[in-house]
Image (cartoon, rainbow, N blue to C red; front, side, top):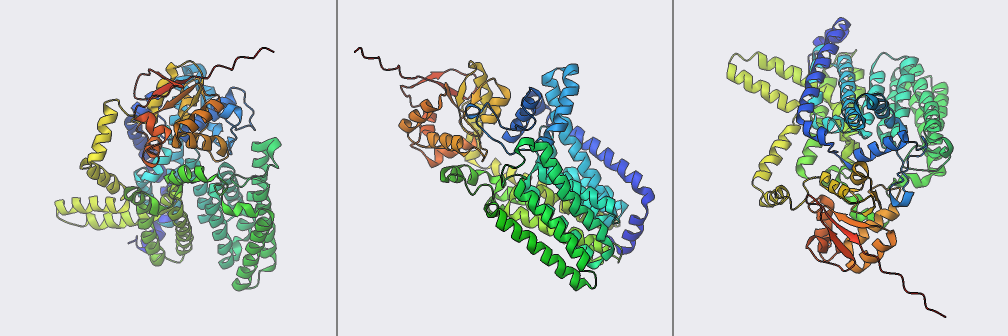
Length: 606
C-alpha cells in the first residue's frame, strides 16, 4: 500500500515544509536519545561494552592518543606486541576529538563515556535526517515525518547506533545513505562528487561496504542509460570515488600504502576503482546514440573492471576468512553469527533482521507501481538498492542495518497510507486497534523480541542459566571478567571474546582475540581450551602467560564445554585441579589460576 501518486507529487514538490519535517526529525531524535540514555544508563555508568569490537575500538583510540603512530593500528598488548589489525583510523577521529576536548574538563573516565555516548547518537541523528530527505524525495513531506519516527524503532539500526556502540557499522549505514541521497536528488556533478566521496570513505572504513557501493554505482550507471543528462553525475561519482579512495588510503596507511590486502582497501582495490572510473568514462564517451548502445558500453566497462581484479588479485575473490586455519575457521568464524547467513541465525534474530526489509520491499514495490512519472524513477532506484542490500543481508546478517535503513522510506509511505485509513474509522476502539496494527506492520521487529521473551519464560534451560548467573556462579556478561584487575599487571591467557575487555579495563596484556589477521594466537587459544590438559600446559607455558583466566557461562566457554567435554576448558569449569596451576581468589564469577613454571634444571658440574 502506498500514498496516492497525486499526494506524493504535491508533498514532494512542497519544499517549503522541509524545515518543518527536519525540526520534527530533530525532536524525534531528542526523544529517542533520552529513552536510549535512560535504558542504557547503567551500562554507560559501568562502561559495559555491547560488543568486544567496541572495547577494541576504544583501545585503538587510546593507544593513538597515547603516542602510537597514526598509521599503526596493531594492538601491541596482544601476543607480545605482534597483533596486526585491518581497521581504519577514520572512525577514531570523532572519538578522539571528544576525548581530547572533554578529558581536561571532566577527566578521562567521564570523557570516555561522553565520547562513547555522543558519537553513536550523532550517527543516529544523521541517519534520521538522511532518511527524512530520501523519503521526502520519494514519498513526500508527510511520509518523511514517519520515516523519522520509524528509524529509532528499527532494531538493526538501533543496535548499531545506541550509546557505547562505537564500532564502524553505524558509519557504514550513514555513508551509504549519503550516497543514496545524492543519487535520488536532481543530478549534478557536485552531488555526484559528494556521493563518490561518501563511497570512498565507506570503503576506507570497511571493505564490507563494497557490495552496496557497487550497487549504488551500478544504479547511477543504469540511470544514465535511461537519462543521458545524468552523465556528469555518473562521471563525477566514479572519478571522485577512485581519487578519494587513493587519497584516503594514503592518509590512513602512509608507509603501508602498497601493502597487499584483501580485507581492506589496498592497491588491488584501488586499481579496480581506477579502472572502473576510466572504463566508465570511455563507455560514456562512446555509448551516446541509443539506450542499448549505452547499456552495452557499460556492460563492457564492468567486464573490463572485473577482469582486471581477477588477473591482479584473484585471491581477493575468496573473501578475507578463506585463509584462516581450519580450527579457527570452525570454532571461531562459524560461530560469529553476525557474519553468517540469515538461515543460520536463531529464528528471532532472523525475524528481527529481515522483517523490515521484507515490509520495505513490498511497500517500495507498491509505491513504485503507483507513483507518477516524476517519482517513479526515484522509487525504482531505491527499490533496486533495497533488493541488493537485502540480498547481501541474506548471506551476511550484520549487513542488515543498511537494508533496514533503505526499507524505511517505503515503510513510512505505507504507514502514512494505513494511518489515513485508520483515522477514517468512526469507532474509537477499532480506530485505536487499527493505528496500533499499522505501527506494528511498519516496524515488526519488536514482535520477535516479545516472542523471544515469551519463549524464554517457559524455557527451563534458560531459567537455570539465569539462576546460576544471578547466584554469581557463572558470568552474566563479559564485564564479569574485569575482576582480573585484582591481579598484578600480567600476561593473561584467556578466551578470545574477553581479550578486548581485559585490555580496555585493566593493565593486563593478553594472548589474543578474535581478529582474523592474527590467526596464530587465535588458534593457540582455541586449541589450548579445546584440547586436553597436557597440550594446554605446553601451549600456555610456551606463551609466557602468568595467569589463566576464564568466565564460565559465556558463549565461548559454553561452546568449549559442549563441543569438547574432555577438553581443558570444560575440565577447569568442572573444578579439576592441575599441579601447574594455582587457583587465585577473585571477586565475582570469573576464575583465575597462576601459572606455576617448572624450575630450571640444575647445571651439572664438569
